[in-house]
Length: 306
Image 1 (tube, rainbow, N blue to C red):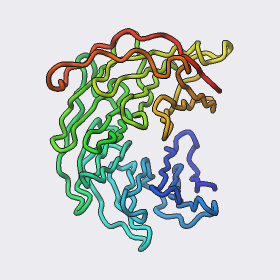
Image 2 (tube, rainbow, N blue to C red):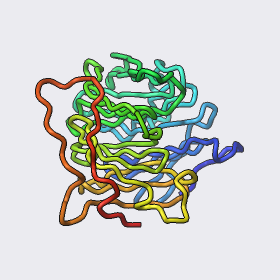
Image 3 (tube, one colour):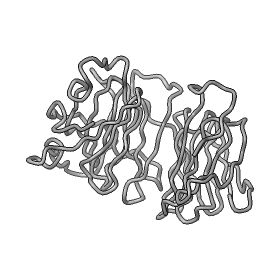
């Protein structure tokens, strides 16, 4: 399966792909036309929407594999119907490229995020904008163009926001930040983060190749994995950094880390411990939007496999 490519430099293209809910189709783009692949035959079913603008994020509708949300480099979101080869709606609310899209099948909404540090909630029936909000920028930081990713919690009501300077949990209906962890001290910028498959943990990677495990309920640090514990001695963390984290779909304590040199590492705790770090103490009262102070966690992975 090969993506359509443009004449632009490969490193300037934004690679993006999405897997349909029934695992039968993959939609993919690398700066050129969007391709729809059949996962049973590995054949290209169709290509569509040649740039400009180029696609920068893709998401299948949770109830209809024919409906695709496509985030674009020109800051719009196009709702495309593959069956009839037609753009049904064009959503405008961001002012920089789209960097994240996530559907909630419980609330019937689409949440979008962009390089403008803006969040938008769209009704997925009529595609009207319901709410929009800028990220809470930590004191001492200026708003810069940086990818912002979103992922729904298992409850389909809250979602994780990942920005280079913060992790945050938002409630969708009011679009309010209920938990936030802000970059501080010796931490390098965040490169990626995801919920574990049961949404009880958040796995986050940093540009200095550090990996951290947080408790999702309060974004308290449970475990910090140093680069030296999984990178070869002859590999410098200044040259290699994590690009993406993928949580195992059935094992809550297992995740994979993709590196900028093409390496992939799979992490899991020691069998004797069975989980990452020490659970932080439960908080009394309602959730707060104040940054949570990370608690000390064990350093180094309990087990890493390449």
